[in-house]
Image 1: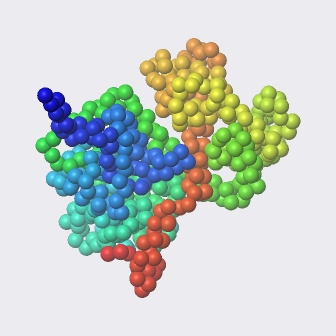
Image 2 (image 1 turned 45 degrees about the horizontal axis):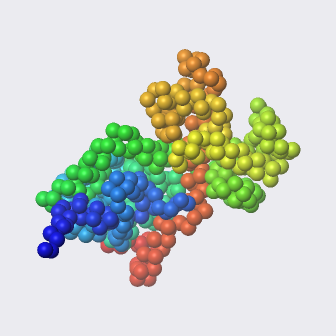
Length: 462
């Protein structure tokens, strides 16, 4: 007698689990999915990987050529989820189904520093406005045109918003529209970009799924977001990607770029050698050195710390460094001391929190970091997460709190600012030493435009 046939997957969620693959439409962008020194990351990427782990499956990321193809792809059920920094709009909601929101943005008008700042939409009748096809920015302009009938713009079918931000920074177009989270990240790399004003009220970002009577995947996504909001995982991921993005102001950014050209070449080989020896990204080590001394080997503070890595006399003696002002000795010693900080932390602390906590201890001492982590745990936070510990480090300067600790008083605000600055310098240094993918994309598109159109004054794909 034949065995009864086993039932196959009954709904979309079961099919995904059965196949072992979650198909996700996304785009290359600092806010979503991009490659850094540790592989692909981004808020959307990290969230999707976490959801796939929750389901027990692997992720297949699908990168269409244009933003508009993401929308048509999910509307036509060519993937399970679109995780691409999508704004919830009434128009889109007619063609796709949105998950609970995970982030809030506004749409902003962007112009270049040195040009007149438009005060309102009425000031936009002169100059070139260009936006990416398929984005909600097109709908925003259509809405604004109802009250500003002279408003005109171009829709670019080739470049994404990153490409248009590059064009604004280069002075090739006058304005574009970008989401505030994207502007927050990209302005670090293009400091000439400026925000004129917000064009919208706060808008919600969410994942999109195809319209269907099958609620299995949608319900699981909703449960997933409810869980990571409740246990603070979502907040921790947002801090990871955005928490330090506004640390460096315009002057800090420009000064760093100047010093990278004039000072870093003198010491880069020493940072690279020490970083290789102690298994550290040389750019992180260089960022520590910049925060400490602005890459000056003769730097000295009123408290007696000296050299590029600003080592104390006690630390130098502990590391058996004879001359703190010798850049080779200072950088090697700083790298060794930082590696020791990492190894002293609990093995349970994951990256990147392990690195940020080790940096805090490099500045304030492991004892004071220990006290801050104890306070964090006592107050219901996670002592293994930088987002929580950095809230309690400043309490070490308050007698109400530090008298309850083992190691006592410390200027707890300083390690917080110290870590956030290094994170900013590190991100900027990685950007400046890697191939500029945004510029590469623009140049590739430009090469496809007929010669008579590919000029500085008419680089617009209509």
